[in-house]
Length: 184
Length: 184
Figure 1 (cartoon, each protein chain N blue to C red):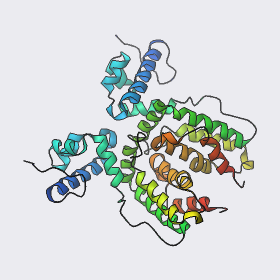
Figure 2: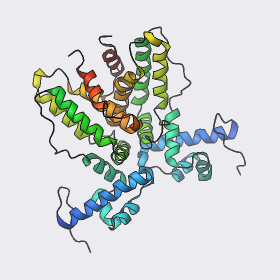
Figure 3: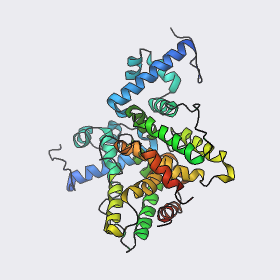
């Protein structure tokens, strides 16, 4: 019997184990079946937990998938700081492309996209925040605005991940950054 | 009793009426409830048709939503042909932005995004084809490649529609085209 409250942040012990097994189950199922054919009872069964635990933590499947998609790339990981904005953005964009070349990560992003657009809490918000932070480090010395990074680096990567994932390769990040910095 | 086969293309009479009432029902429900809370029985009830008709035509809900999202902007409409690639792309991009500033169209795009990534038959494929066609009209005189239109015009619009729809306005299309043609 579960009497413990599942915490929102960094739960320890039993809740952490439940949370982790649910995440793994969602990732496996979204990858195996596609987001549309995954249900909460299916996730609970695969994770070996009571569906009630899943409903209590996330409320519904879409919130769960968005949440897992959002934190799939750890927002507290170190962000490149090389002394040059162009190099920072190149290293960062290479990491994003590599991350999403993994089909499970791409499938979770598509699942998150399905519930985006209502607020800024969509599953790509941490990428926008990271891009903004890197640009702002250079203050008025930055030749690039956060909106330009959004439109010409984040957007083309995310568009390709969602719709044309097979077109992403190890040159994608560098080519996009080169265009962004051309004539600057 | 339905004995008629529902045709794939331009069905007439009763099938056309069924198809149209199903489309209207899907559009209304996706807009009212969000794609995640729409089911085929719900669509059939709203459309006043038998769920069997819906399953027979589309197989599943995700295929239906992708199909409706794909043809929501008629791919046989006239594409701007002004004699200048920059003006063609500006007029075309303005139309796309206006189309997706409609919340129902944006919600259908998000629903389509959820099932993209397996093949090139995603719900934005007609936009890519149109962009490619406009560029190719100008042959070797085009200063822009189809991939550049994809990365720097289609992708930023679609990213914003999915994740940040409130940032689209009547300047979005022109600004993106200006960047695309800067220094060309």
